[in-house]
Length: 74
Image 1: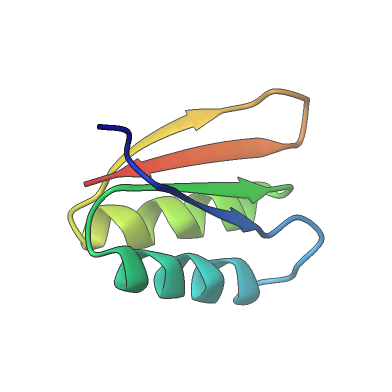
Image 2: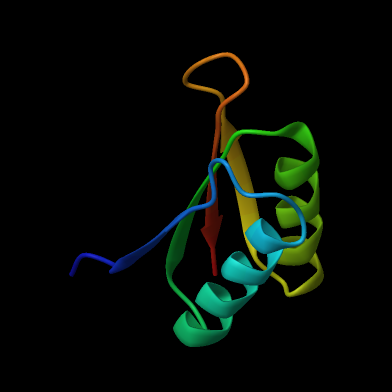
């Protein structure tokens, strides 16, 4: 069985928008996988904290310099 992946593209958005979109996605999902795309270190750090505070495991990839893919799993 493949997990559904909820994707959130927060590139180009200023805080607190990336955190708000990520929060909505993790609340909708409850568990599973949420992929968040961000293009600032601040958004990366804030989404990381949000996810960890809600019990989600987070891995971070940096496919291009300054762009981040956060994979949230629960």
